[in-house]
Length: 65
Image (cartoon, rainbow, N blue to C red; front, side):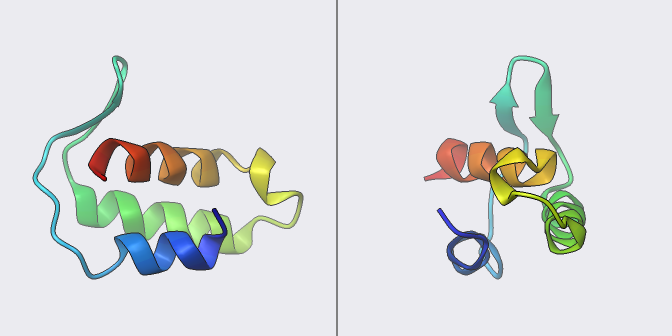
């Protein structure tokens, strides 16, 4: 998925907290999580698939679809 596809799929939607991305990774403040991850993705200058924030967004998308 591209960053634009993730933005379209995740921004402006309502999700029920908590969202478990992995046994050690639980999102409780979803709006803040998404805001920060998209800021980090926008600032990333290298290959996007190596961006930790991008990988977290993909996990979030998979956990909520």
